[in-house]
Image (tube, rainbow, N blue to C red):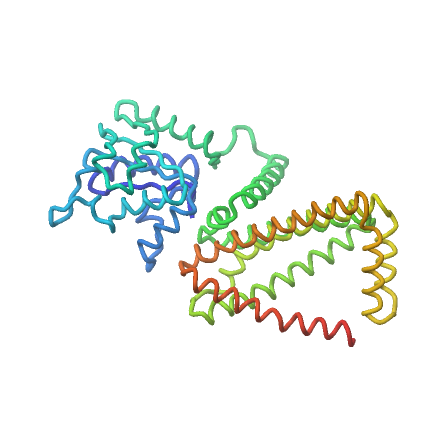
Length: 395
């Protein structure tokens, strides 16, 4: 999905909107601009695709031409008075969903009054408009682009002059990773939607993002517990993370198919890689806080913990001794930081629930079907969990 949603009437401002779309796509990149007939895949439900696109956009640009307000259908009824009118639906969806709306006046059009609009569009008249004049088109569009960059942090895909070379490439990759992590934290469904461009590289980017997050998360946690052989432990953590993701994705794909959604494994993998990454960062951040607190109180506790776990005593005995060891260390600073860790874990759980909406947005399904698929997936997870528990106790 795109960051910039262009709303317009074809018989009112198609030419001006096409010119504006070309400029925005040239500056921000085609994937960041949503233009109905170019951005909706064949076979998609038009109305549902619009709702999803508006909901995951950063901003909606409502292009208003001379006939935007008075345009009528074949029966002479004003289009804006029709609840099914796509322009009305687009702007209503943005206003209800909290997506900023910028009216863009073209070809001499003026802002309508609230009295001239349906009640559901009354707030549209309070949105600050910008004008694109034919006589100063380039200047006005440049101002609009500057606003989109400054106010909404929509990034340009144009190359920075003089930024060629391997070192600049590495810096750009690290900067992109940091920006994606920030956006994933603040707007998970938007980031995930934007990563689904339909290109084969989408899955490569998702996998590289996942690997980077797994490395960062494992590194932070291992440093927190004082492990020195980082390379070996990080490698093990990354492999286990990828294997866990694969198992969870396979079961989730099966769950979605069982509730009647026709999807492929790779579609679920692309979305779940980002959700798994965000959840993992949240878990590791909380674990780092808890481990730091324990290290302040009893620096040797994790060394003793690993020694207990590695003994040949029965599993129940080892787990009881390890739990007692950690409980004895939870006092003073350790207890305080453990409380903060619990808050971080709780926030990560809430974030995961919010991010889970990316599946509904991408698959275009209702809330009931999404809940059924998630519940079925959780139930199927009990099988490998029970198998793992049995193996740990008996093998």
